[in-house]
Image (cartoon, rainbow, N blue to C red):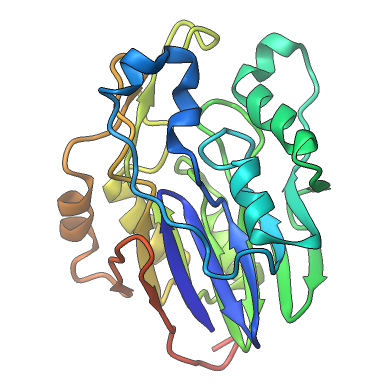
Length: 275
Protein backbone atom coordinates (compact mmCIF):
# COMPACT_ATOMS: atom_id res chain seq x y z
CA UNK A 1 0.00 0.00 0.00
CA UNK A 2 1.09 3.56 -0.72
CA UNK A 3 -0.28 6.64 1.06
CA UNK A 4 0.21 10.04 -0.58
CA UNK A 5 -0.64 13.41 0.98
CA UNK A 6 -2.11 15.78 -1.62
CA UNK A 7 -1.95 18.84 0.64
CA UNK A 8 -4.58 20.21 3.04
CA UNK A 9 -6.88 17.21 3.74
CA UNK A 10 -6.36 15.42 0.42
CA UNK A 11 -5.03 11.86 0.42
CA UNK A 12 -4.51 9.25 -2.28
CA UNK A 13 -4.22 5.57 -1.36
CA UNK A 14 -2.90 2.97 -3.80
CA UNK A 15 -3.12 -0.81 -3.48
CA UNK A 16 -2.95 -3.67 -5.97
CA UNK A 17 -2.52 -1.24 -8.84
CA UNK A 18 -5.71 0.68 -8.00
CA UNK A 19 -6.35 3.93 -6.16
CA UNK A 20 -8.87 5.76 -4.05
CA UNK A 21 -8.89 9.46 -3.09
CA UNK A 22 -10.13 11.21 0.04
CA UNK A 23 -10.97 14.93 0.27
CA UNK A 24 -8.89 16.02 -2.77
CA UNK A 25 -8.63 19.77 -3.35
CA UNK A 26 -7.71 21.41 -6.67
CA UNK A 27 -8.96 25.00 -6.23
CA UNK A 28 -8.27 26.22 -2.67
CA UNK A 29 -9.41 29.78 -3.44
CA UNK A 30 -12.93 28.61 -4.29
CA UNK A 31 -13.59 27.89 -0.61
CA UNK A 32 -13.70 31.62 0.14
CA UNK A 33 -14.63 32.86 -3.35
CA UNK A 34 -17.50 34.91 -1.93
CA UNK A 35 -14.95 37.27 -0.36
CA UNK A 36 -13.99 38.61 -3.79
CA UNK A 37 -10.75 38.68 -5.76
CA UNK A 38 -9.17 41.55 -3.83
CA UNK A 39 -9.52 39.82 -0.46
CA UNK A 40 -8.40 36.48 -1.90
CA UNK A 41 -5.10 38.02 -3.02
CA UNK A 42 -4.19 38.35 0.64
CA UNK A 43 -5.55 34.99 1.78
CA UNK A 44 -2.92 32.33 2.54
CA UNK A 45 -3.92 29.25 0.60
CA UNK A 46 -2.78 25.68 1.19
CA UNK A 47 -0.39 24.05 -1.27
CA UNK A 48 -2.16 21.18 -3.03
CA UNK A 49 -1.24 18.71 -5.78
CA UNK A 50 -3.32 16.50 -8.05
CA UNK A 51 -3.70 12.79 -7.48
CA UNK A 52 -1.27 10.75 -9.57
CA UNK A 53 -4.02 8.39 -10.71
CA UNK A 54 -5.92 11.03 -12.65
CA UNK A 55 -9.05 9.65 -14.30
CA UNK A 56 -8.74 6.17 -12.82
CA UNK A 57 -9.43 6.30 -9.06
CA UNK A 58 -12.09 3.76 -8.10
CA UNK A 59 -13.87 6.01 -5.58
CA UNK A 60 -13.80 9.44 -4.04
CA UNK A 61 -14.44 9.63 -0.31
CA UNK A 62 -15.36 12.95 1.28
CA UNK A 63 -15.45 13.44 5.01
CA UNK A 64 -18.03 16.23 4.74
CA UNK A 65 -19.44 18.74 2.27
CA UNK A 66 -17.42 21.83 3.15
CA UNK A 67 -15.87 23.13 -0.06
CA UNK A 68 -12.25 22.61 1.08
CA UNK A 69 -13.02 18.89 1.53
CA UNK A 70 -15.46 18.37 -1.35
CA UNK A 71 -14.00 19.87 -4.52
CA UNK A 72 -16.12 18.51 -7.37
CA UNK A 73 -13.51 19.49 -9.94
CA UNK A 74 -10.75 17.62 -8.14
CA UNK A 75 -12.97 14.58 -7.75
CA UNK A 76 -14.05 14.62 -11.40
CA UNK A 77 -10.42 14.78 -12.54
CA UNK A 78 -9.28 11.96 -10.26
CA UNK A 79 -12.14 9.48 -10.65
CA UNK A 80 -12.69 6.80 -13.26
CA UNK A 81 -15.83 7.36 -15.39
CA UNK A 82 -18.07 5.01 -13.39
CA UNK A 83 -16.63 5.81 -9.95
CA UNK A 84 -18.83 7.24 -7.19
CA UNK A 85 -18.39 9.82 -4.45
CA UNK A 86 -19.13 8.52 -0.96
CA UNK A 87 -20.35 11.18 1.46
CA UNK A 88 -22.21 11.61 4.78
CA UNK A 89 -26.00 11.63 4.78
CA UNK A 90 -27.63 14.98 4.05
CA UNK A 91 -28.80 16.53 7.36
CA UNK A 92 -32.13 17.97 6.22
CA UNK A 93 -33.36 21.16 7.80
CA UNK A 94 -33.67 24.68 6.39
CA UNK A 95 -31.31 26.21 3.87
CA UNK A 96 -29.98 28.60 6.51
CA UNK A 97 -28.68 25.62 8.49
CA UNK A 98 -26.80 24.25 5.51
CA UNK A 99 -25.04 27.34 4.20
CA UNK A 100 -21.59 25.76 4.60
CA UNK A 101 -22.70 22.72 2.55
CA UNK A 102 -24.49 24.53 -0.27
CA UNK A 103 -21.57 25.17 -2.61
CA UNK A 104 -20.25 21.61 -2.71
CA UNK A 105 -23.78 20.20 -2.78
CA UNK A 106 -24.51 22.21 -5.93
CA UNK A 107 -21.16 21.56 -7.64
CA UNK A 108 -21.25 17.75 -7.32
CA UNK A 109 -24.29 17.21 -9.61
CA UNK A 110 -23.04 19.84 -12.06
CA UNK A 111 -19.85 17.76 -12.41
CA UNK A 112 -21.98 14.69 -13.22
CA UNK A 113 -20.69 12.73 -10.24
CA UNK A 114 -22.61 9.80 -8.77
CA UNK A 115 -23.19 10.28 -5.04
CA UNK A 116 -23.58 7.54 -2.47
CA UNK A 117 -24.60 8.64 1.06
CA UNK A 118 -23.14 6.66 3.95
CA UNK A 119 -24.21 6.36 7.56
CA UNK A 120 -21.71 5.89 10.36
CA UNK A 121 -20.48 2.25 10.51
CA UNK A 122 -21.58 1.58 6.90
CA UNK A 123 -19.14 -0.50 4.83
CA UNK A 124 -18.61 -1.02 1.11
CA UNK A 125 -16.23 -2.92 -1.17
CA UNK A 126 -14.58 -0.94 -3.97
CA UNK A 127 -12.10 -2.97 -5.99
CA UNK A 128 -9.37 -4.14 -3.58
CA UNK A 129 -10.50 -1.63 -0.94
CA UNK A 130 -12.94 -2.02 1.95
CA UNK A 131 -14.20 1.36 3.10
CA UNK A 132 -15.98 2.11 6.37
CA UNK A 133 -17.58 5.34 7.56
CA UNK A 134 -16.55 5.89 11.19
CA UNK A 135 -17.68 8.54 13.69
CA UNK A 136 -16.56 12.14 13.45
CA UNK A 137 -17.98 15.35 14.89
CA UNK A 138 -17.95 18.53 12.86
CA UNK A 139 -17.08 21.80 14.55
CA UNK A 140 -19.83 23.61 12.63
CA UNK A 141 -22.53 21.04 13.37
CA UNK A 142 -22.54 19.61 9.84
CA UNK A 143 -22.54 15.85 9.10
CA UNK A 144 -19.06 14.37 8.96
CA UNK A 145 -17.45 10.94 8.93
CA UNK A 146 -13.95 9.59 9.26
CA UNK A 147 -13.04 7.17 6.47
CA UNK A 148 -11.31 3.86 7.13
CA UNK A 149 -9.69 2.30 4.05
CA UNK A 150 -8.46 -1.31 4.22
CA UNK A 151 -6.38 -3.09 1.58
CA UNK A 152 -3.38 -5.40 1.39
CA UNK A 153 -3.74 -6.24 5.07
CA UNK A 154 -3.44 -2.61 6.20
CA UNK A 155 -5.80 -0.04 7.68
CA UNK A 156 -5.63 3.70 7.00
CA UNK A 157 -7.94 6.07 8.91
CA UNK A 158 -8.59 9.61 7.65
CA UNK A 159 -10.14 11.84 10.33
CA UNK A 160 -11.36 14.67 8.06
CA UNK A 161 -11.35 17.78 10.24
CA UNK A 162 -13.20 16.37 13.22
CA UNK A 163 -13.14 17.98 16.63
CA UNK A 164 -12.21 15.91 19.68
CA UNK A 165 -14.94 13.45 20.67
CA UNK A 166 -15.59 10.29 22.64
CA UNK A 167 -15.79 7.70 19.88
CA UNK A 168 -12.03 6.97 19.75
CA UNK A 169 -12.17 3.87 21.96
CA UNK A 170 -15.21 2.43 20.17
CA UNK A 171 -13.54 3.01 16.79
CA UNK A 172 -10.35 1.32 17.95
CA UNK A 173 -12.22 -1.60 19.51
CA UNK A 174 -14.35 -2.29 16.44
CA UNK A 175 -11.89 -1.56 13.65
CA UNK A 176 -8.37 -1.10 15.04
CA UNK A 177 -5.50 -1.26 15.21
CA UNK A 178 -4.82 1.39 12.58
CA UNK A 179 -1.59 1.29 10.63
CA UNK A 180 -1.91 4.94 9.61
CA UNK A 181 -4.06 7.72 11.06
CA UNK A 182 -4.24 11.05 9.22
CA UNK A 183 -5.25 13.76 11.67
CA UNK A 184 -6.04 17.48 11.28
CA UNK A 185 -3.94 19.77 13.49
CA UNK A 186 -4.82 23.40 12.69
CA UNK A 187 -7.42 23.81 15.46
CA UNK A 188 -9.21 26.65 13.66
CA UNK A 189 -11.83 28.72 15.45
CA UNK A 190 -14.62 30.09 13.27
CA UNK A 191 -16.95 33.09 13.28
CA UNK A 192 -19.34 32.72 10.35
CA UNK A 193 -22.53 34.79 9.93
CA UNK A 194 -24.80 31.72 10.04
CA UNK A 195 -23.22 30.50 13.32
CA UNK A 196 -23.97 33.23 15.81
CA UNK A 197 -23.09 33.84 18.55
CA UNK A 198 -19.63 32.43 17.72
CA UNK A 199 -17.75 29.92 19.82
CA UNK A 200 -14.08 30.45 20.77
CA UNK A 201 -13.51 26.68 20.78
CA UNK A 202 -11.65 24.96 17.97
CA UNK A 203 -13.68 23.62 15.03
CA UNK A 204 -11.03 20.98 14.18
CA UNK A 205 -8.50 19.08 16.25
CA UNK A 206 -5.85 21.20 17.89
CA UNK A 207 -2.28 19.84 17.66
CA UNK A 208 -2.30 18.47 21.19
CA UNK A 209 -5.73 16.90 20.69
CA UNK A 210 -4.58 15.22 17.48
CA UNK A 211 -1.56 13.78 19.29
CA UNK A 212 -3.80 12.38 22.02
CA UNK A 213 -6.35 11.03 19.52
CA UNK A 214 -3.60 9.04 17.82
CA UNK A 215 -2.74 7.34 21.08
CA UNK A 216 -6.36 6.59 22.00
CA UNK A 217 -6.89 5.08 18.55
CA UNK A 218 -3.83 2.88 18.89
CA UNK A 219 -2.24 4.33 15.73
CA UNK A 220 1.03 2.87 14.54
CA UNK A 221 1.85 5.96 12.46
CA UNK A 222 0.24 9.39 12.77
CA UNK A 223 0.40 11.81 9.83
CA UNK A 224 -0.58 15.47 10.44
CA UNK A 225 -2.82 17.05 7.78
CA UNK A 226 -5.16 20.06 7.43
CA UNK A 227 -2.67 22.82 8.29
CA UNK A 228 -0.56 25.53 6.60
CA UNK A 229 -3.25 27.45 4.74
CA UNK A 230 -6.42 29.50 5.21
CA UNK A 231 -6.31 32.21 7.84
CA UNK A 232 -8.78 35.04 7.60
CA UNK A 233 -9.82 37.03 10.62
CA UNK A 234 -12.45 36.85 12.05
CA UNK A 235 -14.03 34.06 9.99
CA UNK A 236 -11.37 31.35 10.12
CA UNK A 237 -8.51 31.51 12.63
CA UNK A 238 -6.10 28.54 12.90
CA UNK A 239 -3.79 28.12 15.86
CA UNK A 240 -0.28 29.55 15.70
CA UNK A 241 2.58 27.15 14.86
CA UNK A 242 0.52 23.95 14.52
CA UNK A 243 3.40 21.78 13.27
CA UNK A 244 5.85 22.52 16.13
CA UNK A 245 3.05 22.16 18.66
CA UNK A 246 2.10 18.80 17.18
CA UNK A 247 5.72 17.62 17.19
CA UNK A 248 6.05 18.49 20.87
CA UNK A 249 2.75 16.85 21.82
CA UNK A 250 3.45 13.68 19.82
CA UNK A 251 6.92 13.15 21.23
CA UNK A 252 7.30 9.96 23.29
CA UNK A 253 3.85 8.69 22.32
CA UNK A 254 3.08 5.07 21.50
CA UNK A 255 3.23 5.70 17.74
CA UNK A 256 5.65 7.15 15.22
CA UNK A 257 4.91 10.36 13.34
CA UNK A 258 5.36 10.93 9.63
CA UNK A 259 5.40 14.52 8.37
CA UNK A 260 4.84 14.69 4.61
CA UNK A 261 5.19 17.42 2.00
CA UNK A 262 2.32 17.85 -0.48
CA UNK A 263 2.75 15.14 -3.10
CA UNK A 264 5.01 13.01 -0.90
CA UNK A 265 4.09 9.37 -0.31
CA UNK A 266 5.22 6.48 1.84
CA UNK A 267 4.54 2.78 2.19
CA UNK A 268 3.42 1.76 5.69
CA UNK A 269 5.15 -1.24 7.17
CA UNK A 270 3.14 -4.41 6.68
CA UNK A 271 1.69 -5.89 9.86
CA UNK A 272 -0.84 -8.61 10.54
CA UNK A 273 -4.37 -7.24 10.81
CA UNK A 274 -5.80 -7.38 14.28
CA UNK A 275 -2.41 -7.49 16.03
